[in-house]
Image (cartoon, rainbow, N blue to C red; front, side, top):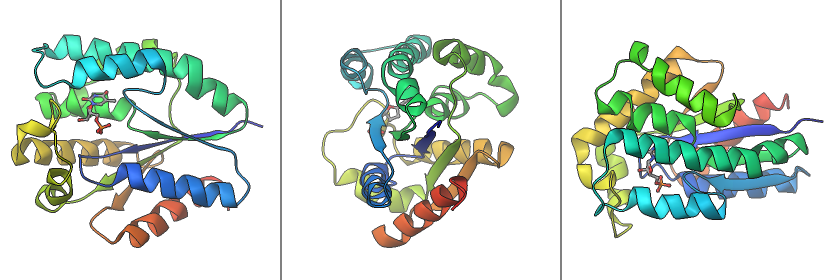
Amino acid sequence: MEGLFITFEGPDGGGKTTQIHKAAVALRAQGYEVVESREPGGTSLAEEVRQLVLSAELPLTNTTQTLLFLAARSEHVDKLLRPAVRAGKIVLCDRFCDSTFVYQGLANGLKLEELSELRQLNAAATEGFMPALTLVLDGRPEVLAKRRDARGVKDRFEIKGLEFQQALRNGFLTLAQAEPTRFAVINAEGSEDEVHAAIMKAILAKLGK
Ligand code: TMP
């Protein structure tokens, strides 16, 4: 039986990492085999690309950033994500293609109808491997910023400030609105348990439970 590929997206500070882990624990308790991963990352080469691309010190053009994220993704899909889904596992991934469409696209000045080039590049890198469900952990940037700021060293994107975070939020909501069958928007301003309950409801609905 095919597994299920689920991605978690949204601006920084939405609690994705904590929520992915809580969902994994809950799904395992129901007997599912679950793999947790993240982007950029998930393989040793992709983790090295992560260091490069997220360092706020190294100047990179938007195109170079995009190609580095896609190189890491290609490797990740091939070595980890697709084999796990083919083996019947549920894969929970912290960010995937929609981060590229928002960070390198919509929040970088492109309109929804101008994403076709990014979508094509992504399709080539992944050979069309796409999530069955994408959960956007959404909230007001000023609320999520408090959690983000508590985390210490900031990466290339986190240093850009509230206006950029607002553009990210709008970008993810625009994608979700355009593709409502793949996306579910989760209110990430609630308590950890409330957010977890909303996530489990969306996942179990996708699993037909
Ligand atoms: P995070 O794992 O802490 O969320 O950091 C990943 C950062 O990389 C985050 O700021 C979003 C950014 N990113 C992109 O800009 N494009 C992408 O395609 C991906 C996967 C991440």
